[in-house]
View 1 (tube, rainbow, N blue to C red):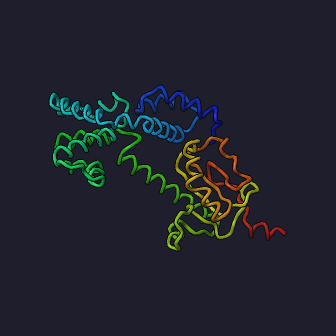
View 2 (tube, rainbow, N blue to C red):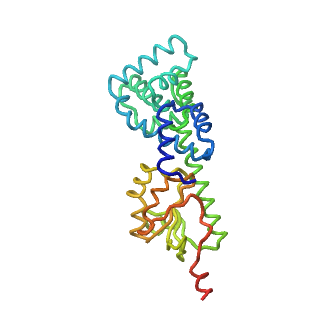
View 3 (cartoon, rainbow, N blue to C red):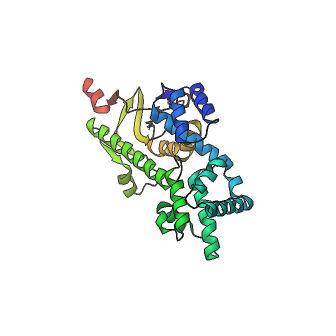
Length: 283
């Protein structure tokens, strides 16, 4: 699903005025009924992450951390079963699993007298039963299961969706009898930055030659697309020639402006693939 910049801006503006909750997602679907749910969910997640990045520093000052930890202690002292951390995160407009991380780090620091390793924190966030304090373990668990944009649960879902779309793309390539090298084969050959699939025989899509295909199980907004161009797509273009990026959940159509230079954007698998063998057989 392609959106114009104006359509996208309207959605982003709407999201700027609502809390990042499942209720807001329902409101978003009601407000923009013609857009696909998966596209809206992807935009919702990206916009929220931008907001969190903008405000990240203010939640990590020594003063903020001290306040949050004290409020957590006071809250559980009053009622250990209440969702103290989750409500605190919502009150200060911060991601619940990031709030859980702040308080967990502080708790372990107080316990051990040293700053805990990231590995230990990540492991405890993934499996809160490892947390040596039952009340905090429950509070952290409530945060991770109620966070729809951050945390180990969301990371797991995103990874699974990304993998699912790569599998889908692989099946489509096989169905079209296109021979390709997948990312893992290219890594084995010693390439570091590689697209998901390199076509052993280039094809033409909408009059453009394609040497590689990259699958993105997300919406292509300006921010993420510019980062991908810089970190991935131009590197692929330099090494392997022109290619195709599929944003399965759509993209801002104005971003598809590098076709002549050799980067094509689509929101689905192209139906009009012309293979070299195909065109040679016609002559």
